[in-house]
Image (tube, rainbow, N blue to C red):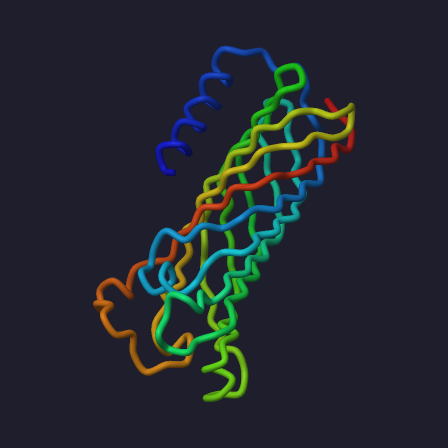
Length: 212
């Protein structure tokens, strides 16, 4: 997956150097709906499976195609009941806000929008074990950053649809106390101390508030 993401970044850079931009939007409202896929930490990868990531945002693009934006991210990861022997049920809610810097360029009806999101998230481990032990979801917080790229196709003067790929790095470290159990059998402590990463693949829609 990393190779695919790097290939998309390379493609974006080639278009940036060799092509002449035909359309430069002003502000835009963007909505992405994607499927998260866990990569690391071991406990996170083994216990949770991504169900949805929803990302609404606003972006402004300057005359030189440099863009800045801000938005929100909601992600939900369900406990994989078939891959744990802890009788664990429930899920993980990740709610965050971010700033984005990047570049957005159009070549005819085809567009490239890529950059890095940097933000802060609140994380709620809403499991049956936490409800039994503390009476509510276990809560923690952390920072994240996320390289992302979108391949857009205009559907009119003011809108486009896009294919999106993101790769998120979170400072979340999933340990036994987060899900409400005493220990994870068979998982080394050093593997629990890894940061949490996941990539998302999905689709997006953009509405443009005018053009340059």
